[in-house]
Image (cartoon, rainbow, N blue to C red; front, side, top):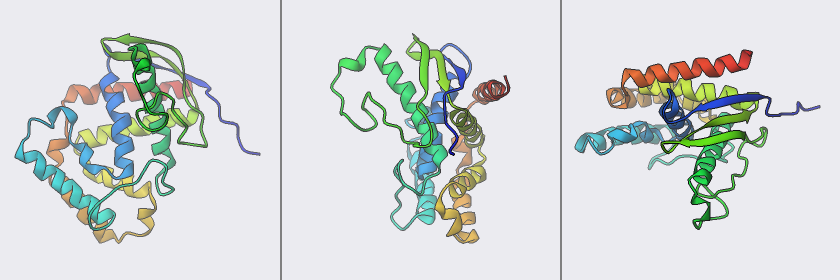
Length: 233
């Protein structure tokens, strides 16, 4: 008999004014995109408009890595691809539930939205072996979202993995990024070690551009400890 998955844990979102909010929301999106092969998303969003020609060089090297890991011409997976690790879908689901709750509180539910897809207000479960998180309470805090969410153990562990990946990426540990992506897809069974090494070299040459201030790393570490504590409470 299959184990019944249920939302047995309650976690608090840090809210805009508290440690971890920026790091959590970026980690959810970044982890999902990396697991789909969008390695060029490692460039911090707030740095995108400050680098000029340097950004083009960074993105080019990321795309070279993507081409090595996929096929000539690049490309990446969709969230429902059978070749994508289930944890990417778990994290994606949590991210979308947060986004939709925030949009609802901001009064955007009356805007025209498609019935399906990233911009819809109804989220349809991507990780079919899990259950969607459910908000117990929520409030806007300077456009950030605070509140309590009921999650499954699967979701909670997935969030910890995503936050750990965020720290690795934002401290320039690009080897971790490639290993995480390759090991989370069917690629790991197909790619020669030399190809993976070369992809790592492309990213490593740009790793200083992926980093963020130390205080953000500290906030992320504190939130990881909080999440791990919820597992043992």
